[in-house]
Image (cartoon, rainbow, N blue to C red):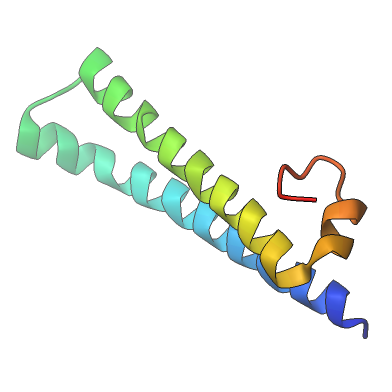
Length: 85
């Protein structure tokens, strides 16, 4: 197996794991947010929605991390990547 493919697969798996973990945590906290902070409706929706940008920032980090780990070949193989070339 090509080392580049293996490293790229590991980085992609980590990205999926982190993104899925964020989604699960956000989904599991809504009832407690309502109960503990007595919020609902728009405030609850806004609170949950603001968690999405943090997940997006994790993806940005993983993009740069993937370029660092997999190298320039990965950057050239993935044209939508915004990492350094």
